[in-house]
Image (cartoon, rainbow, N blue to C red; front, side, top):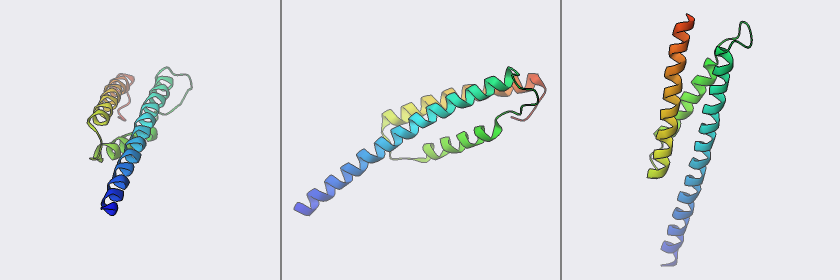
Length: 108
């Protein structure tokens, strides 16, 4: 009986640790989206001549989003927060694509 109780405690501690880790990943995703938006704003406002669009940072962020989306052991609240962040990133990505097209570059 004691072993079953300790297994349950270990599982619940592991689940709490995973939830906290996923929350940290979500806050990192929020920060990364904000930083990428700033990089694109700098690029589109032309503060530096010959500057290239931050496509590498965008690719890293999309890979991170895919990794987070593949995690199936998250709560509904965490899934909702991830969906909100992905939605915000998607709207930015569409905006950047349109701005790139009007600028004459078709890299996105």
